[in-house]
Image 1: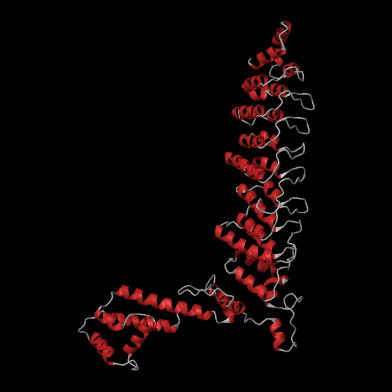
Image 2: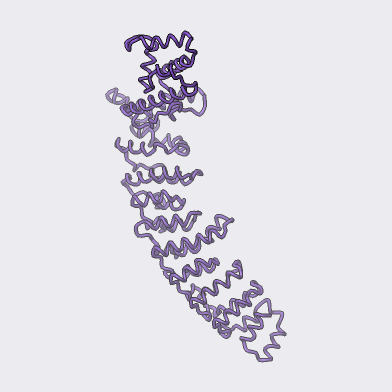
Length: 526
């Protein structure tokens, strides 16, 4: 919206432009020429006022336009641009001198309504709210604390809504309990533009950020929890939230924890908010901080992985003393990383091979920051977890980084036992590659579990489930030095449900006193 003076000048210059384009024999054109040549600057002539207006808006001498008139649209664009520029710069400059406007976004834009003056509808009720809104924004709204000062404390300063604290602007906007429902609704839709400036002003006026809501949460946790629920995950919104989070982190004097002991970094890591994680770490947040369940931000993000889990883990590793070796509930971060595929699949049934690739990236990041592939208990072993998932890249990476191929779990099972004891969800090609990787890295093919079964026994027992793929597997184990006599392999062959109907054939073989190796080879090639 232009000031009235600017509107009058715009209309006057528009009329002058029409005169310059008129026929030079017309009365208007000849009168304009005469007045501009004869009248002095002190004259009250309308044409001299036009000359002054041209000087004000830095336009060329108006007499030039009589000689070289501009087209209609050229003239309109010229005067509009000059007038708009002049008033925009003047109003923006003058607004800096008004104390009541210093905390409002005063970027004056012509033909753009200021957000404070906008309404959702043309309803009279909405329009009547505009004066109240502007008074609150400019600090001219009279609160109970103001009335108490004006009346020499003859009027109570206590808030009439909650009757608990003095009604100051801070109390009215932030603390009044009875206004909390309306405040929460506004927070869900309010734009973050200008929020940082408001917080800076609030702090300058003596405000502090240690107040908690009804759930016992400080402003920073409220901000992060609300942002994590937002569907809009645009880069601009996350950047704004990160800047505000950093400011609150620096200016909150108490420890910021929710009722479960989660820090802001826990909340940001679980939601996969990379920019916010980065901002919090720069402000001193550490990923080694544990909640009441003993979990760090690193554990939390790995237990509920998002699609950007690799980037989240990488950012958490930038903090001081990342907890790469911390074991929570018998699980290290490295073990959780090798179990990502399974955990992601629980939340997204459309999980593809891309998540498997992502899993190996996370494992690599952890190892680069000091995670030891051999630091684990016997229940949750990273190598066995990767083998169980059929993750060739992760198994190869762990073995390259020094993971012991001969490691066994609490049941005494080696990686080969685990590979063949699960249901056959892994392809034959993947099985063969994994088996060869383990053999090449020195795994003992004759190791027996706590039940006395060797890897060869497990492979034979699973023959029915794996169909004829066991033939090649059996040969590879035998070539690697597997001993059929370890763990009574012949009895396992006889107990196989696929071959239980072939007893006459086995008796015939036994009568011929064939060796156990020959029997096994015959079975696997039958």
